[in-house]
Length: 508
Image (cartoon, one colour):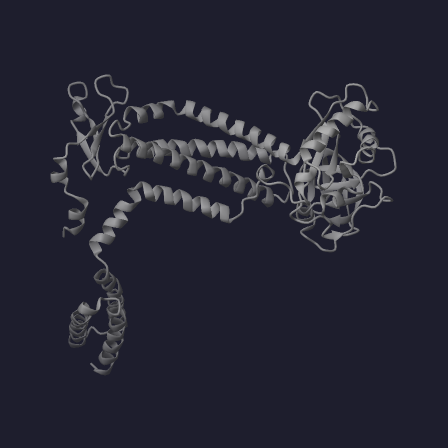
């Protein structure tokens, strides 16, 4: 057998071992490398003398040498400490909290589209704190939009509190474009609405006085869902509620109409519009003058509306600021979430009963730690489920190429309730299997008794804390009247039997 292939193989093996030796601590490096090089040399000589040196055996020897990196890492770090950390850290409460925080941070990093985003942040317009909205109250009969338009035009002229106004009338609509039909909300607006909100179309132009209702401006979402962001969309047409309309502009992506999620804007126009009672709802946007408090302007406007009698009898208008709308929406969703959580707690009462029966009862510090961890874990998991529900619904809405969906909010709410049910169920089971002192997962399982003598002796399972804090007794029959679930604190003498954590780590 030629000696040259052996020398070449030894050279490559020694090169790998020298690279791996840099991981080994300096005081152990020479001894470690001599031991590995001696083993490899004997292996090569055996292969040469036995005539087994081949491509396959060379690959096996090189693979063995690459394994020296793992051995070098264990010489650099204490193997027992690392393996103990890998096995025990996932059972700690810190790991559970960090895992929830990491998942929540990953969802927030994706900037979830908030189907409910208007609840938490005002629409991006100029000085939203000085913007008021006027709409029909819940008890008011329907009002024709043109009548409110005629009344609202006079408000800035009769008082110096407002600098400009704009009237709108929104309604559910159906558009049909290159990508098919889509259910949206559209609105007829006066020509100064976008100037009042401080926004200009990103493509095309704003409305002018001479524009008819056949001229429309699209939202960025509808532009992307129907025309895939085509910059040559101007002068193209689509069907809005069965009639052909021409596109004259596209709004910026960050723009949101303060009151409704409007996808198509058209002008009030000069021609009579068919009446749509209880289907098309009017409203007014008012810009408060600089230096005037919004609450003061709100009260003055309410007085002005009550003095004027040019509206039909029984008409009641509600004046609100953007903050009022956000607080109202937040309160509504808050009530829905609270009621949903109460319903979940009612459905999980048996699990909560098991948890309370085995709760910690001494000392007070352990009780606070146990309850605080349970509350923090549930809060993080519910937040994670909430944002995950928004992400999933938005992904589905985007997948089916629609700008908005009338049932998106309801779908996100039901998905949140389902996810919260699963998360709460898991959280209770996880908390049930934790030590009442150190809040670590109970790892030692002891089977008691014999299943053949259920009626004659106590049988079940005991989960023991490996730190010696206590044991959780779980009977074989949950509904049995002889035995019940309970948590028992262990005497300090158990620490001698189980040993301390440091002694277990240092043990070979």
